[in-house]
Each structure stands twice: as C-alpha cells, then as structure tokens.
Image (cartoon, rainbow, N blue to C red; front, side, top):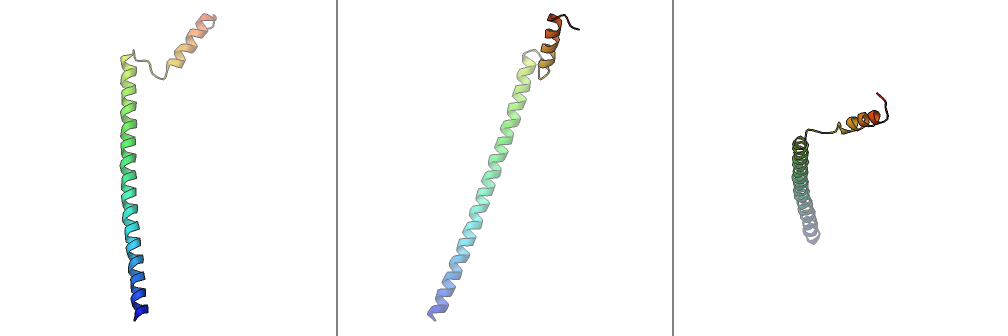
Length: 79
C-alpha cells in the first residue's frame, strides 16, 4: 500500500511540475512577444521621426553622398 501511495505522489508531483513549467514557458513566451512588439513599434517610430527630421532640414536624405561627390568633382575641375 505504501509503495502505491508513494508512486501516486511521485506521479502527481511530476505532473504538477510539468504543468507549472508549461505555464511558465507560456508566460515567458508571451512576455517575449510583447517585448518584441514594443521593440518593433519603437523602431518604426524612430524611422518615421528620422524621415520627418530629414524633411524638415531641407529634404536631404541618404543621397547626400552623391552631392558631396559632385562638389568634389567641381572643385577639382572634373565634370
């Protein structure tokens, strides 16, 4: 009788541990998803703000390098 009771207790304990682990994994996963979504929102907001700043400063964006090359060529007498 004692062995059967002990076996049932062990089984119940294992089941409780796995259930608790599954719940913890779900919570952790959902937290990670929330953090990932916040990070994506933050990145999108930053890129939108950078674009707005670029438009406010005269419309120059990533093409500034082309303007610099043209200016250097003009100074050196190249076309």
